[in-house]
Each structure stands twice: as structure tokens, then as C-alpha cells.
Length: 211
Image (cartoon, rainbow, N blue to C red; front, side, top):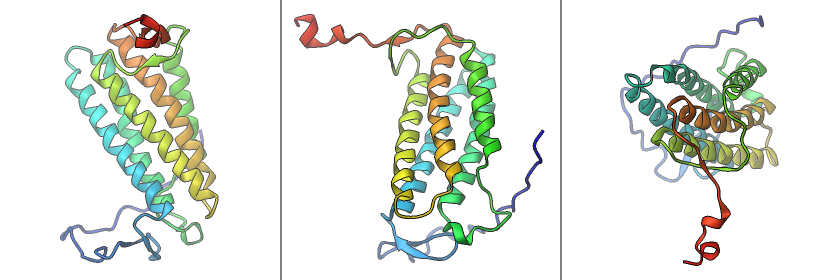
């Protein structure tokens, strides 16, 4: 077992929500550098925040299904942990790497390895896939597909940022694995509920069906 890392606890106090410091389109990174609100670093961790919100929505859907499908809580626990990890990842993106504190929350290879292990475990329970799948069949499946596409966008934005500024390599690795995991998890929830997957059929298009 790898050595456990303990990070600093959050020290912020949100007694007042608005500060007016961003009224002119600027914001501060964790280390204090002022950048435009559409700076690539802000776009990257803002998209990670968007992903986290949609994961919360998927987790809420799983909670609503608990009475009928208690086995789904296996995934709900994973999603909650991933939400915490995404905040840690956002901490990396929101800080210039040279100013990262040794105990500042972050993503590590251990987090990536856990995603891979959980993905392999649940994927082993799925039927073989012989076609692309369409989002749907259940609401939570579609929500997880939304999460997958947002995760891919966060990965693209982080990659774009890395072309001009230093980005910790664990950020890209984690987002890449997470998008794959979200695909597996979207399939797994339908399988766990006995709902058939919606397979892509190119001949369902109007041009192919003659309608």
C-alpha cells in the first residue's frame, strides 16, 4: 500500500460571498497572481468545477434510485470521492506550479491508479460492446455521459494551457482516465438496472431510412 498523504485543510471563511474585486474582469490565482477571467488557466479549472456540479447531479439521481436499486450506491460512493479529487485537481490548476505548497491538495498517481482499478472492476461486469452507444436508456446514464463530455473538454483545455504554461502531468492523466471511467460507469448503471443500451445505428438517420 502506498504511503498516505495528508493535505492542508481549507482555511477560507466565506462570511461574505461578493468582493467586487472581479468587476473589471480579473481574478486571482491561489498564489495571488491576477489574471483575466477568460485566461486559459481559469477556463480549465472552471470547466473542472462544471464537471463537479454535473457529477453531483448524477450522484443525486443515484440516491433517488437507492430504494429500487441499492447496488447502485457502489457507484455513488465512487462519485463522491471523485468530487473531492476534482477539487484537489482544481487546486493544482488554480496555482502557478512554482508556488504550490508541499501540503496543498493535489492529484497524484495513486488517484489515477484507483480510477483504473475501479474502471477495470466494473468493466469486467459489462457485456461485450460491438457498437458505439448513444446516451440514454436512463436519466443517470445520460447524466454520466454529460459528465464524460465535460471531462473531455476540461482535458482539452488543460492540454491547451500546457502549451503555454506548466501544468502538472497528473492533471491530464487523471482527466483522461476519468473520462474513460465515466463511459464505463454510464454503461454499468444501465446494466445494473437491467436497461438495454441504446446502440448507434447509422441507418436510423432520415437519409438512410427514406423518410
